[in-house]
Length: 264
Image (cartoon, rainbow, N blue to C red):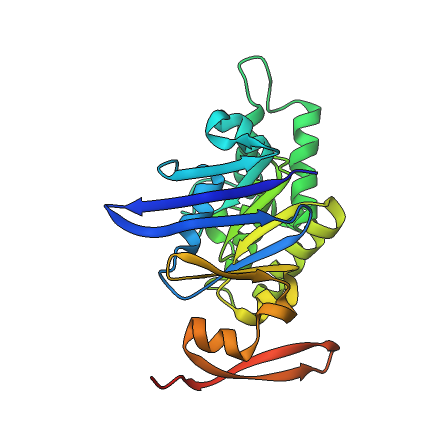
């Protein structure tokens, strides 16, 4: 079990304050969704947690150790990130791209072609259901197939924490559900901590165990979906009037339906 904590985080970009006083204890082996209006700093927060952005004040701790004290390779063994809008390579096969996830473990003395390395790559592809097209060029894949390939590459790192920045963006409804179900399976079967920025409030409600709401540079609220995703918070955070309908497939859950803008 790996514990992740953000403590008193402040981030400025070109002297513009993006996030301030961010304190979050992420629940180990659970799925946390970060939501909030456009421009509130969701992706910025995820990049800081992943170590892609190291220009901030405050601390980000993994098992009590500041991530700034970890080498990029050692950090990559603990967590993997799938950023939004990852550039698609034109000349790599699916398996070749997935193998790039093994970079934290590579050395001049360790061959990528070893039986153990190949087993890890094959397992990552099996978990994301892409083995059947492992020899196709990534550039020929559909949006859903491509996203599953990126997730497989992240899994090849064998991380304890998986970070996803809007993993369903630009996907049709069927592929959105497919990706979210794979993420759900990884969390449950692998006991992997998942932290994901989601644009779809209903996806956050259905798939997350914990919700972090960002607004005006701060954490507006954190808690279980049924507690924090109510009509009052949706009005305050997103400026919309919403109605809640019972989910016919799961009576304990509700579907959020925005109906109008909040009038000032």
